[in-house]
Amino acid sequence: MKILFMSVGKSHEGYVKAGVEDFSKRINNYFKQDWQIIPNLKDAATMSETDLKKKEGEIIISKIHKDDYLVALEERGRLISSEELAQILQTRANSGLKRLVFLIGGAFGLDETVLKRVDFQWSLSKLVFPHQLVRLILAEQVYRACTILRNEKYHHQ
Image 1 (cartoon, rainbow, N blue to C red):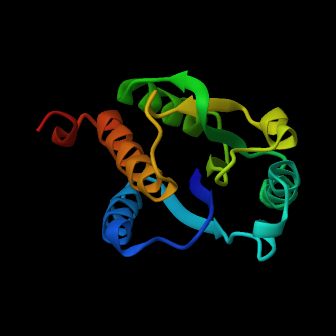
Image 2 (spheres, rainbow, N blue to C red):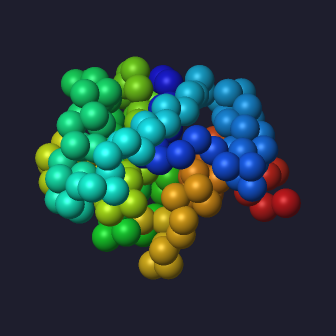
């Protein structure tokens, strides 16, 4: 199984880049992974929130494969533990899934067309975080889940 991290916005900023790269490299010891950053639309400042979400949604949907398991990071999603995330990874890997996609939407969230395609909506917290920081938290939590599956020390250092 391959893990694809997909995010709308700027490329990784310096304050998160090293951390994201470090955790991504560690994840590669368990699952192949990659990041796909969908750049902000050039005319975003002139678009309404609805039009912006719709256009971002079209781009996202065009990059999702029919057989992908799509997890959207969504503030109204379900709160889960690190152990539950590990179980999601294990279940998907055991099912023969080719690609597990974690999606971080744009500044205004995800369009309804994308939410209808999502298999699981996950909230990291009741707090709201900047998108750049969400990338780092997501990478760390996926790495943590991998170590839980192998009963390694990282989870309870």
